[in-house]
Length: 426
Image 1 (cartoon, rainbow, N blue to C red):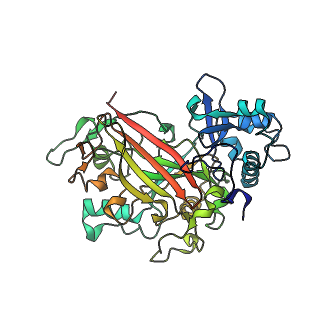
Image 2: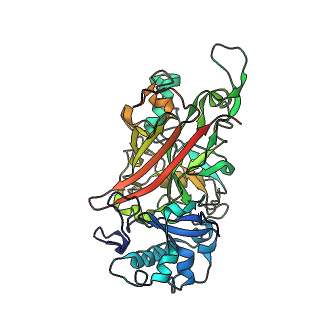
Image 3: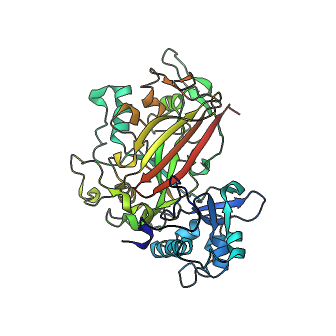
């Protein structure tokens, strides 16, 4: 068993049993003190962030590949991610040992402990990655089938290519924002079915999409292919993604080149990147693929994870969130390794920090649908909320929260929150 996976491992930091951040997690993010100061790389444990830059200054990463690199003083994770898998694993091991209840090196050093261990209430989490490129896939069979059925009928639900390759498009990296960032309702053209010409204005069919994002650690050279078997060597970790969508704008603009303004205004990501090493105990198989993919996409390994997912909605008249849907990352038909292999089969190069989003993750039942479009079945069945409010589409003042977690008998590996509030058009 990997030392950091030990389910009996306990920290000297008080961690609630339901916390997203037990000692087995050790995610990576970037924070700034609310009182002001530099951006530093950190991990999370319980209700605290642990400042890795100051730990490095104290010499506690001596003998690892991060020693002397100053990567934890960078304003993003990119420099650390570029060091590769050995550096990532060694860093997690050092942190795990420092936080273990059996190790007093940090616990008993009051001056250093008080400097590096900071309450989450006293910090502001930042966008953790400098995202150079952003690819959004369409890899949930249930989602693609639901959307296809709504617009084309069940006999034409899936396009002819869908079962043969991971469909995707190039998204807009500049508008990726971190948890807690407000989203302005986008404006654009749309055309009502009963109108002959389009009109201009704020989107009337605002939607969310429940997705998971894969962040690239090791880049590749132009002309290089990454095989399905080698794909995980290039993956640093995962985060929650809300791919906000203006459905009425999308319906008018998407032919023949696909989404543009309907997707480019905002994409929200959670602030903590969860490493593949932390997720390893929850590895599982995905759906059976029929027909069998072409050779370069055949994956005989288990390359997905049992990650529970939830969508929560709060209107401006509510004090708390209602859970409106649940799903699971393992429902995806095309897994992250197949996505990466397909992405690079042309020789397209990857760069550290690139984001590959999964596409909406829906499941087999109505309560597993990952978007408002599906939950309302094409805007025809309102979502009923606990306070009596109903929604066919998101309204100004609505907040959407995505959550994700892996659950074992002893601990939870969580992703933190991915929250955005919809504001009126600028």
